[in-house]
Length: 277
Image (tube, rainbow, N blue to C red; front, side, top):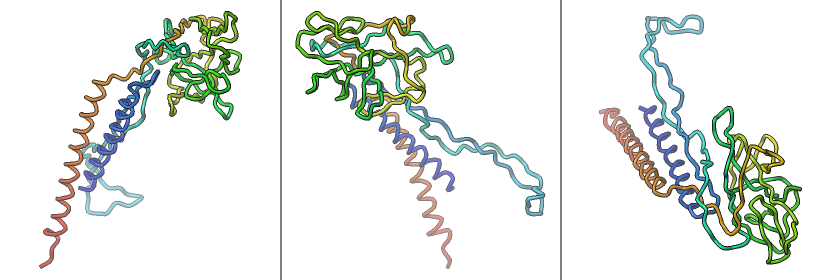
């Protein structure tokens, strides 16, 4: 009976985490470049039950005869959250600092068959690199182009400075101020999306080195274009997210009722069956 309590509780915990994930997706439906998470729920390893036969108790040297009874499942758990790396719709804003990254030709990974992913490179305060698809850029007090307060980097690794209102960003990412080219926006190509680790504020990081440049000089198999005055919308499917949330609520409620039933059975066993007259 206690095993059933653990199984029902494990189901409640997995559905609770799934609900939190879906709530976060819905909350970021209007966040530019946001990539929705998907949950991977797996069952715990099954246990094979056997009945011990014979009159003698089993010892370390002698286990006795065993008769297989069958496998026992011990519940499910949320294994991981996997971002969905699909292109979001483009939204026109008219702001010159907004830049949308449009994927035109991105090769798939030979091992997984999954398409690669393009990202803007940004510099953090500790000197490390992060990557983002949020092209809703702003200009800070140091005249640097920033994403969520972090400087957007050029292909030479330096922050991009915008010193005037008359500037242009070409489709290949070149920044021109008063007709003069000053920098090129650093766009990186992640060939294996499994190596991207999602962080807060729409940033990604990697643990296997720096992704290569996505420009023609760095990767001729990749083609993309930047659209100034546009942002990439999130790829959250709102209707599907709400539907999945209702399903998660129902699953949580079903496991909760099972847990309550076990609790009532234990209470009855303690207070009535175990009563001594």
